[in-house]
Image (cartoon, rainbow, N blue to C red):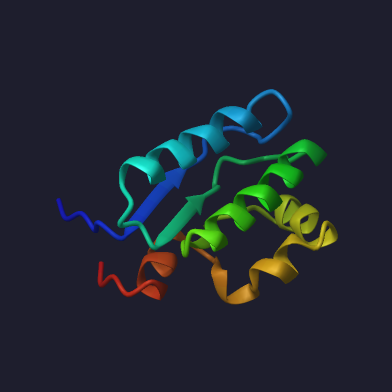
Length: 115
């Protein structure tokens, strides 16, 4: 196994909604606070089937916090309907399409890892 101290990759295994947004946002920020070498956060969302308004707002807030801390956010394996919601909210425009990847492998390569 190889680890990269400047990359945190997480997989979300549920839809994102008001009931769990605080949990996943707190978990990510807590990990980043403990490991301050992270420069790239990759969110793998193959299991995210839906996203509601509160989760879209949480993504916006998380993105701003990460950007302020010098951490780049990357999305991978995001399903079409979820991408549509992210697009409609304006989030993808703010994030930039170069940070949206077809799969986690592509995201890892984009941040400089040869896997």
